Amino acid sequence: MKRRKLISFLMAFVGFMMVSVGFLFMRDEKKLYREVDNEVAKMDFKDMLTSANMIFEEKEEVEVEEKLQEVDMEIVPVAIYVPPRIEVYEGMTMEELGAQLDKTLRNDLAGKGYVIASKSIEYGVDPIVATAIMMHETGCAQKQCSSIARNCYNYGGQKGKGCGAYKRYNSPDEGIEGMISNLSRNYYAIGLNTVEKIAPKYCEGNTWAGKINWYVNKIRNA
Image 1: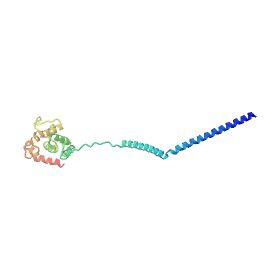
Image 2: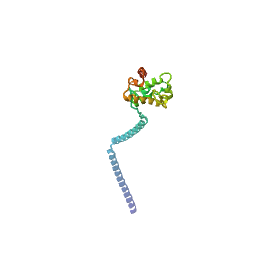
Image 3: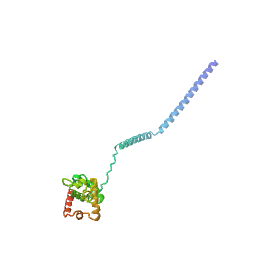
Image 4: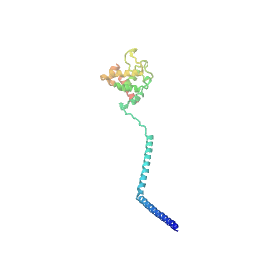
């Protein structure tokens, strides 16, 4: 009898303890849930969403900038250098002057406009006057250049050695430079810088100046 009472007492005690422990656990669990709820309530979901959107927007902006940079690198045009316009004679560049002279140059002097232009500017001689003298003295403006021009490349009728009584040159370009150099040293350098001033010294005939001026006008109006 005593033993049964003891067992019943122990069982009741154990049950009581289990109920007490369960109650305490439930109370702590509720307390934990309440704390979690409070923390969640404190959180500003609007700010969180805004921050998230900002992160995504920044990422998109970076991606767009990278793509734009790639496109810019692909379509950047190659820089083109445009040389400055340099006029050397009556509003013409050296190339334009050479082309103007070429319009009337024939036979052995054909295509030598740029050489005449560049050497005339270099030596300070009027390129049209120099061309006119060469056309007249050589006969190259007609059907055929003179033998002195064809065989000795003497385009100005300069006296000297190597070609009878005339000076011989080794190439057309050397002959052109020699003729222009002669005009520069023996005429322009001493103030004989027009056809009328050049004529008395260059040729004894009275018609020489008129013939040269005829070629001058032909070249200018070509």
